[in-house]
Image (cartoon, rainbow, N blue to C red):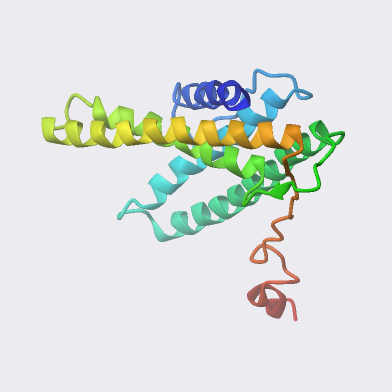
Length: 201
């Protein structure tokens, strides 16, 4: 099943990042560029770096100038994440291009790649909640509460991977079909964001 194939790649990316735990470290993707593994690893790497951006920017003592610089990095990261989701959907569109879609086929509420986006974030939640559940200097009460949350996340992983694989099976069988909408984010576009296009005058 594809979700069982993808999740360890997400975990590998997360573990590789935490060898140095530095948002400025360059990615060293171990997979060939023409492979879907390369794209999955890169997608999670962006998610992982952004996770830590979000931690840093919440520092109450952060310098305002540094916070603004970091906010710009988060904005750019969000755009890259969206682009990568669309690349992954392109992979699935090509993979299932020859499927004979049944007349009664239905569309899903989200594309496969957006489901994998959620799975990538879930991998990060599991990693960091496990850190808290096993953090030696934390109180026993803290660790116990985090273990309870971790158990829920692991249950969510089971449900999400099942749902993703069911969706892909349905698409492959022609019972569901893919229809991908480009995100068309407006806030990064100087033709669509009023603040940006008014400043161009």
